Structure formats: structure tokens, C-alpha cells
Length: 259
Image 1: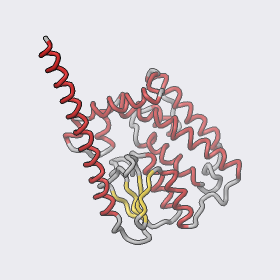
Image 2 (image 1 turned 45 degrees about the horizontal axis):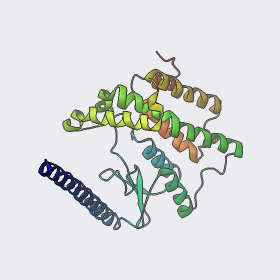
Image 3 (image 1 turned 90 degrees about the vertical axis):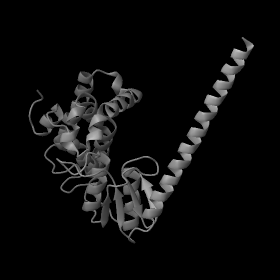
Image 4 (image 1 turned 45 degrees about the vertical axis):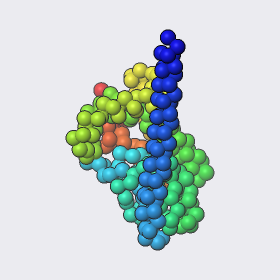
């Protein structure tokens, strides 16, 4: 009996040691992989922004709302850039990220603030404080709330439509149910995933109605010209218009009633 207990304890200790070593090796491998990736981009062309994001879609430029937000900003601000889709995930595990003269940075909002200073450019000079405040509120509403509705539609309830939107090898198609389960768990952890799909859609559809009311007859949320937050709003709405085929979001953006 004592021998069995000792053997059991030995196995537990051995198993724990294996897990500890495996985690250490995984961390070292990830660090090595990241350092190798960054070293490659340290040699990027001087004074040119390298935008690292996901590959082009079949139906619109990017299914990453934040990648599309940043690329839209670069175009409006007339900042020279090059798109890299081979390394879409940055050092902090976020999409998109940029390289600029040896500096690597993630988070689309922080990147835009960084670029504004480096290139001394602003898109907000023709907008009023009221317009900018409303645009900021709309950006936060879409980024932090509405996008969960698009995730529910295309990753949880209808993940089989993803090959219509993005190019993917057969293996990725087979693994889609696993990715769907990950997104579902992410939504539960965030909180919104604890609601029913119908409740999630109703809450996020309301965001589009609010957005329409705030925009009114203006061309952009910044007024006659797009402001900085218009880039984000476009990146989010593009997901609804071109990235959720057959959804109530698509119909609402087209001026139609949801089915």
C-alpha cells in the first residue's frame, strides 16, 4: 500500500515536472520566434511604415476591423506604407501591428497616436469639438460592443460562411469548429456571450440605429471631412456590409429591414 502511494506521488511529481519544462520550452521557443521575426523587420525601408495585418479577403480588404481602421488612416493621412500579411500577429499577440524605423508597436489606437506625432498630421482639424466627441463615443460603441455581434454571426452561428469571406486552405476549413468554440468561450468570458444569440443581435443592431441617428445628414462623423475616428467606424461597418453575408447587420446597412 505504502509502495503504491509512493509510486503515485512520484508520478504526480514527474508529470508536474514535465508540464513545467514543456511550458519553459514553449516560452523560450515563442521568444526566439518573436526575436527572429522582429530582426527581419529591423531591416525594413527607412521612413516607411510596415503594416502587419491579415491577408486580403475575397469580398473586402480586411476582416480585421482594426487592421482596416489603421490602413484607412494611413491612406487618408497620406503616410507611405507597405502591407505585410505573412506576420499578422505582433509581439503582444495583437493584430495589427507596425514597424517603423526599427520601432515595433501594437494596438491600432496607440499606433495612430504614434504616427500623428511622427508625421505631424491630423485629420481632426476641420471638425468641431461636438463632432469629435460624438465620433469618439461611436467608435467606442462599435469597437467594444457592436463587433461582438459580428463575431456571434460569422464565427459562432455561421462559421461555415468564413470560406466565402477569406481564402483558407482545406485544413483551416476542417479546424473552423475549433476556432468557433474558442470565439464562443471568449464571448462568454467577456460577458456578452452569456446572452442568447437573439439577445446579442438585438443589442448590437441597436448600435447601428444609434449610429445612423448620430450621423444624420452629415457626410462623415467628422462633418464634411472624415476625422480620425471615422477610420475606425468604417473598419467596423465594413465587417457588417461585406463580412456578414445574409445577416441583419448587412440588411440594416443597406437600408433594409432585418428578416
